[in-house]
Each structure stands twice: as structure tokens, then as C-alpha cells.
Image 1 (tube, rainbow, N blue to C red):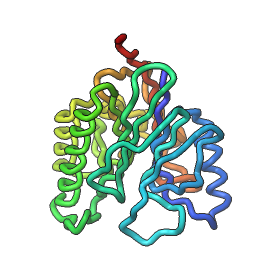
Image 2 (tube, rainbow, N blue to C red):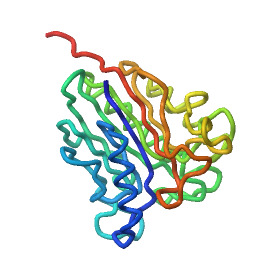
Image 3 (cartoon, rainbow, N blue to C red):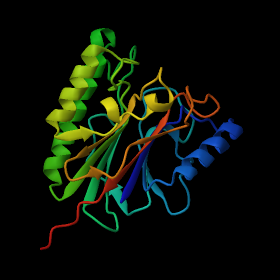
Image 4 (cartoon, rainbow, N blue to C red):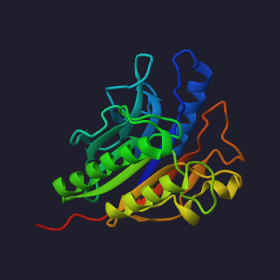
Length: 251
């Protein structure tokens, strides 16, 4: 079984010692095997035995160590191919002790009002441009790594729940189409979104999607189990899924 988690931790600064301490405790309590942390800091580690790959470029003012995406793994890991967005996306190849290798793609897609590589936000243009480029990445990585299962996770800035929370109908359709085109399943969409179960007026805009070789063991989990995100942690809920491993085919 694999435990995969993602969380946007809302840019923890070195000066925010108390919040950083709370975040560390919350992250370490989840006990995930692989983390996709977004709007994070390279010092926010899930614990001993984890290594990280992080985005090295940025498109906004930032403090040293801050990054858009960090993938942390307790298993051996190496960078995979470069992505179409070196600021807000990164891919890694991970080799678990049991089961097939994994390509993990971590991302932050544009939010409402966000530009992307000079493309304006109006009319969802930035979201569409980033999504199209990243979907090309997802397909290429799967072609280049046929021996691997694929995990896509991070901050999509778009709900996929049964009721509207954040984003737009246009962006939602585009995201659902891209996920389907890449032969992925979103384990945090529609009735699988765990957030409304404890926060009826909210929904997740962070997601975890997987290829067909990976199957959930149970329902997805979100935290903190409150009606709103806890501002002393982050303005996002975290998400966890547990997956059954697809065993390697014998030679």
C-alpha cells in the first residue's frame, strides 16, 4: 500500500516559527510515503528518511528556500524529464520497495486572476495555456516511462466536487477533459472529494489523480477536519489517498 498526500502550505516563511512548527507536526502526523507540497519551503520536511526534488525557478518575489512545488519521498527518487513550466511544475521517478516504479508530477495551475508565462488570466486563458502545456507533459512522461504508473497531484485551483466552490465552469471542463485525455482518474473529484464531508461549504481545489494501474484502498482523507481551513496552518485543506500497488511483471 502507498500513502500519497498533497497540501498547499501557503508559503511558510522562516520568520513564522510558530506556524512552521504547526505545519511540521501536521505533515509528520499524516505519515504519507510520498508528499507533493505546494507553495512550500525546502526545509519543510515530512521527517527523517525523506528526500526531496523541488522546483528551482520562480516567477515571483520569494525568500531563499521557497519553492512552488516539492516532491518528498521515503523511497529512492530522481528527477524525471523537465516540465513545460519549470517554475510551477516538476516530475520525479520514484522506486517503491514493492510494486512498479512511479512517475510523480507535482503542479500548481493558475488561479483565477493569475497570469502564466505572459498569458493573461482573462477568460481562463492562462489556465488553459498552462493546462494544455502540462497535459502534453503528462502524456510524454507516460510514453517515455511505460514501466511506470503515473501520479498527478498538487494545487489545481479548480474544484471538481459535486457543488461549485472555486474556479469556473470553463476551467472545470478543460481540466476534466485533460485528465481523461491523459488516461488518469481523479481520486478527489465529485463524491470522492473528502472536504465537503466535514466542511459542507467548501470543496477541494487540490487533487490527486492516478493511472489505471493504481487503485484506492479506501476513501480519500482531508485535514484538518474543520468547517474551514485553519488559518494558523494554511488556507487549504490537505489530502491523502491510499493506493494498492501494481506489482512488477516478471521478466
